[in-house]
Image (cartoon, rainbow, N blue to C red):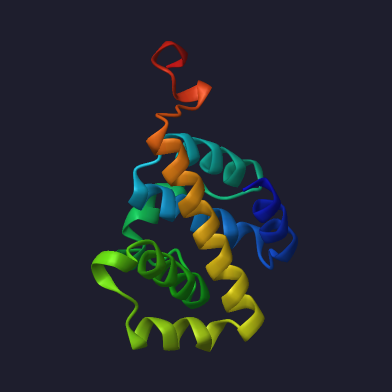
Length: 135
């Protein structure tokens, strides 16, 4: 997993978008560990509180660009593959805003955060900041 993560990080084409993708997948997977970690990293990189708070409802918010919306829709489709599949419309939209290499990099990034989420949730990993005594 660490080698895969290093490769994905090396291919990262847009760090701010990458954090939004990791947060959105973690929201869908219910991974508190990754949500806290990546929201903190996004804030440190300059992401606004408003965009972080509205990420779960990105479709209803004007705060996200068309490119970000395509990436978030792709994130949801890849994350929820077993229940929803990937529609042609979502695929066409991600391909409209991202080149072939970027679509592959984005998909690998989504798969990687999904794997981390599944490990953290399965093993009941809770980030130290999210511990009850830290609140």
